[in-house]
Length: 43
Image (tube, rainbow, N blue to C red; front, side, top):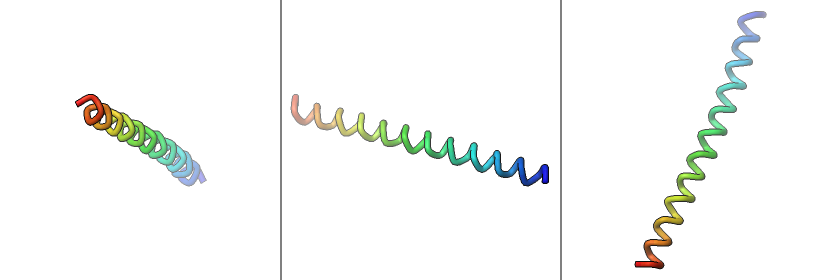
């Protein structure tokens, strides 16, 4: 019972951190795209 509860909490935490990581990666990718685009536009 206790072990199960701990595993569930761990799984929830893992999912949350994975979502945060994906969001950060998306943000980084968007910033990189913007930098690449602005370099291409401004030369």
